[in-house]
Length: 147
Image 1 (cartoon, helix red, strand yellow):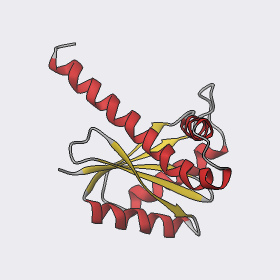
Image 2 (cartoon, helix red, strand yellow):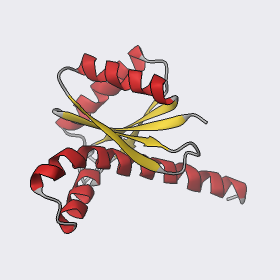
Image 3 (cartoon, rainbow, N blue to C red):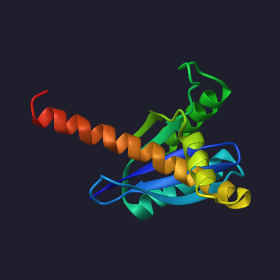
């Protein structure tokens, strides 16, 4: 079954997560260092081919009040390039608090600062993707019972 790729796009690193074969669980996958947007897009599309990805979900970093900041513009440029260069559907998903949630969890688990730096991005991608998968599952469940 095709998978879904979750992307936490950042200036320095891009965190990646992938769904299981059933599309129910998000699993952390990798972190890509950003050398250029072209390189990141090439790497993401290569991974999509290798992992048989059908949909890409990119986290949209809205401000807490829902307003848009400079990070949203960077993500939207990235999404536009992905859509133009790839053949897969690319969706955006509200990622408010995903990185903070992961950071807090790692601090609470006594993970060292140096180790946290490498984990936050792919775990944030996992949180984004899991939220997306859960929303799709609950929407399907609601359709099944006629809500």
